[in-house]
Amino acid sequence: MAATGNEQRGASAYYVSTPIYYVNDAPHLGHAYTTVAGDVLTRWHRQRGEKVWFLTGTDEHGQKIMRTAEANGVTPQEWCDKLVEEAWKPLWEHLEIANDDFIRTTQKRHTDRVQEFVQDLYDKGEIYQGGYEGPYCVGCEEYKTPGELLDGEGEFAGQKLCPIHKKPVEMLKEENYFFKLSEYGPRLLEHYEKNPGFIQPESARNEVVNFVRQGLQDLSISRSTFDWGVPVPWDSGHVIYVWVDALLNYATAVGYGSDQAKFEETWPASVHLVGKDILRFHAVIWPAMLMANGLPLPGKIAANGWLMVGGEKMSKSNLTGIKPQDLTSHFGVDAYRWYFLRAIAFGQDGSFSWEDFSARYTSELANDFGNLASRVAAMVGKYFGGTLPEATAHSEAEQAVADGLAKAVAEADAKIGEELDFAGGIAAVFDFIKQVNGYLTEQEPWKVAKDTADAAQARLATILYTAAEALRGMAVLLAPVMPATCEKLWISLGAEPHIGPLSVQRVQEAGTWGILPAGTTVTKGDVLFPRLEEPAKG
Ligand code: MSP
Image (cartoon, rainbow, N blue to C red; front, side):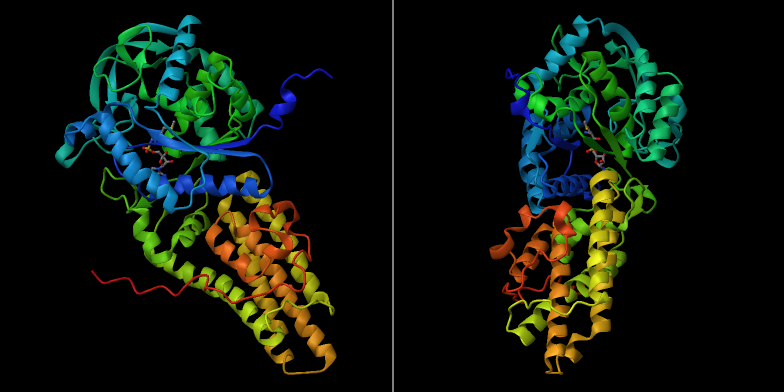
């Protein structure tokens, strides 16, 4: 057969993206929420053995960044460089985010391609010149429709406010270039219809469908009153609208227009994770831009809800932004990664509370999971000199644990890997942890150990093997969520010399019973979840 080039490309990658974040300020819990979700999703697919690509980055153009830089007396580029290097990248490292690339929209690899893309639309007759006047929110970097604005009160009395930022909008009148977005309504609706999973959750899908059904307006894609952006290639008096520039990152970062082989192997994205505030940009404008250019559409746009503080979206602009480091210094990085995905149904809003985090940490992580691991290691140490014994006296109770693991694997894989129901998937694993704790309470190995008869010793060995094998399964299933902790558990089980590193354990096989062989060296190791210190009284 003649080589077509396709053989080399192989199966296309599972490609996940986060939004690219505005660098007007340092990251807060809300930003980290989406990025951690993306990291868990990609680690899950890696644990399945799939080829994965995980992209994050920063959105550096536009008026919001320009004004912030001006207010701080530096150039926009200096501002972005500082924030990216000192705040954003270090946070992702701290949170163990395993992204494959980090795109910045001021990079030439991006700006050149943005110009080409827009030029191409212009050449195809998709862009025309026109005028526009309307209320603009700099926080959103978006023209608003008069109907969605709120009436200001107090210091903003008499002014119209953005419904998201609760700050006054500005009336803008400009001669701009427009993209013929209005022509794409029918094709978009057809795509939503044919691909029911394209927008997730259902509520987000309905909102977008209703919005598009009402009829789309053409989109202003250039700005001429400031210059912090990518110049419009055929008219240097304009810069490209920051959202058009930003959305294109998903394509430019994986080789659009520069590395065709990489692009074909990676594009289209499997999942764009977005906050619900930026859903329409991703589910309406972005697919229309791709249609206009003849590129395939992403598989899914998954909208997450907001982390709320006092009933409002957590944000720096209303001074409710909490730094992730304020929590990781107390709870640890892995517990932090776990908590928000465990406690809040993905897609819905949720409130953060220190008390809820502490309570769940103590009951689920320290007592249920951490104690289970340390008790099992301690008993293998005490009764079998630290060598995992063989299970020779199976009973129904052991079969129930084996079945429980298989069920947890199937549920977690469907929920986390496919449905993006992180809370449901993690709950499935923690139900299994509870089941194994219940099994030990019922079997009472510490009592069985007192009987030196062969049959009793065989039971003791079987019980401890069963618990250790269950822990093996938990380590595989929780590794994407709590990588460092599960690594410690893997070491404590003495698994690596016998069955290889944790990273090569496959989700698909995790529910097969008996993978951990007898004879491993089990050690107690560090406590997985140390007792929490009392928070300092301020
Ligand atoms: N730069 C644009 C995105 C361009 S993507 C092509 C932007 N940036 S942002 O920094 O303002 O916000 C990005 C994302 O951060 C939100 O959509 C959301 O994913 C996340 N969040 C910011 N605040 C949040 C909460 N309070 N809660 C949950 N997520 C939030 O919009």
